[in-house]
Length: 412
Image 1 (cartoon, helix red, strand yellow):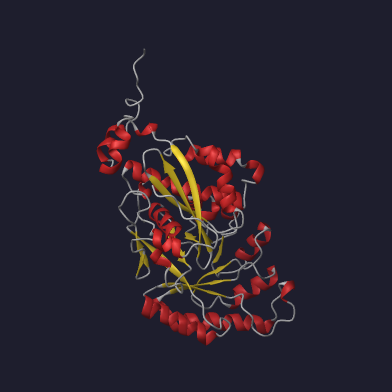
Image 2 (image 1 turned 90 degrees about the horizontal axis):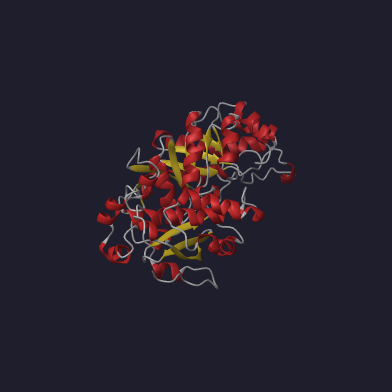
């Protein structure tokens, strides 16, 4: 029988065996190498937050479990169930290979874009959490190390009357003064009372004046205490978007987000190049193959991928790498639970061009209860040094807030 070189050819084997936590050492020592760890199951549970968050857990025969999250969307749990046979029995450290394997195996379900990519993202994030725990390193280390210890968070703000410029200004001041955020976002696709036909995407002059008044009141109220962005949710025609962007050029606008529908990149490029107002796009594009077209065509000033939707942590890192070649910053869109929010923070820590990560749940009192750790403090996330993502699900809170009919994860 020939000599077994598997451990000798694994430069991390000795390091990992030294650093595995006590509760997992016994499970792995008998196999002699973490290359023998296998995935045994993948499970999902949907939580009824301000969006239906799909939490994902990947189980192994070493008793180590990784937790991830997929962007909300109909059919995502069913797609993850469909993918289980493609990862069970595989080594969870092979993140890139498993990701490409899932993209290939799910091509019939549409793994170029859409909810299939979102489902794969949930597994990919869980694999980063799992690999970090196996190797006893934080997830950002799997992405090449970190540029910063803290990641800035921008708060997506709302009011009872979002069309009232004074109400928006009052809420902006409250969020800055009481909650400690120095980065905010408000919606501009709000009714002005002057609309004749919203379906045609055209903004009448009075409507533009109304939206410009929201921008003026909010930015003047907070002044240099906070950066403020404004979201249009793909609502306006090209001409209207250009007139709106021009109308707010004199104000301190951090960015104007998604002013036109996402399908036509040529129109998006034209709008972006027509104005000095920074334009942000990206949450409705998938994988680096789509996001790079926005960047390479100079159709965006700031790129905004949504990590648990766009393809996961490594895919977001790839998007950031392309953006960095064009000196474009990254502001990650995020409507997630603390799990994917922390995954975004790890990526934000590991890329040079991170601008901020969105927080969309400040009005949901139990958001942070889903995990045992503190996540956002004074508008920033301190990236954990704990293995993996560095957050631990509070199973009681998960069970309390599950979507009706869902089942809780199995214990490790």
